Length: 162
Ligand code: ZN
Image (tube, rainbow, N blue to C red; front, side):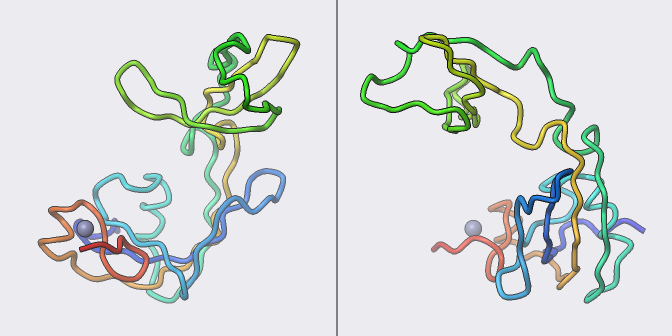
């Protein structure tokens, strides 16, 4: 059964990649909260949460195609060192945000440096990875009108503002 839409769903999780590296986590002391039915998390993870009871744990394994996509060699781009500020030391593995022509900011990683040739990787950092979520469903409640108008959860695991 899918989750009812417009619920505030609070979860704890440990996300590991293929190599067993912990990529991200949340727990009952610092939960992650989202609004159901709004594509705010990976659809496969949201679907599996709909099969869970509050307080239960589940291991959800998500292949790249259902996660952040397959790794695309065409998303590598070579740029000249001169495109970067002279006083910035560049290293392989360094990440930063690049502006796209339509005004969005996307994360980019330096994949390789050869003299003045800098190879940038525009793939999502988790592209090509099988993701394992050890997830716990902590709480479910109806979203308030204010949360729905803001498009995010307030309170524990949500946004703190106002
Ligand atoms: Zn808000």
